Structure formats: structure tokens, C-alpha cells
Length: 101
Image (cartoon, rainbow, N blue to C red; front, top):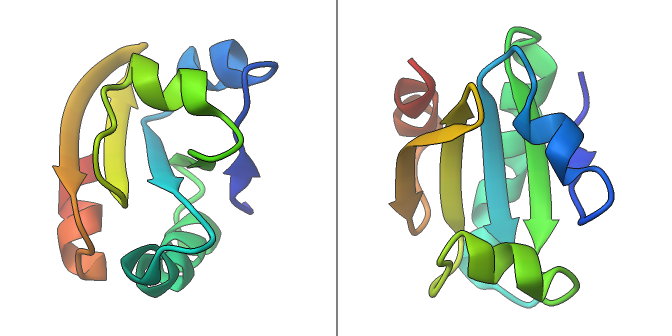
């Protein structure tokens, strides 16, 4: 699967997915976000058992605020509509995958 671009309009549908959801809060100007982006794409492509999405904090400030995002990249894992894991800063692929399990 490909990475979904999450916004106010589709957030509820993604949040209520029956799959674990990985959300990457990012901005285009953020260097560490650009380092994480290809890993997020790989995880989405290689792991159809997960729903993977990205939220551009510059375009979706309300969503970022609702998740308490103060620094980016922030990665959030949700299961059954609840946040079960989160991390701030660039992480290697193995650590991101470990967050999902």
C-alpha cells in the first residue's frame, strides 16, 4: 500500500481502521522529516497489515495540535482509535517497525 495523506476530512476513517495505524507528522522544510520519509514509504509498501499515513503540520495545524505535536518528525501509532505509541525525532526503520508491534 502507499502512504495516505491524512487531513481533517479523512482522519476519522483512518483512525478507526481495523489495522494498526502509523502516522508521520512532518513538514516539507524539516531535514529529519525528509530523512524519515523514505522509511515511511518502505514500511507502507512492505507491510500491508498496517495503515500508514502522513500529516503535514503546516497544512493540518488542528490535527497536529490535537496530537500535541511540538516537534517534528513525530511518529504516532494508533490501534482501535487509541494512541499506543509515539516518538519524536528521526528513527531507523527497525525502531519504527518495533513501535508497531
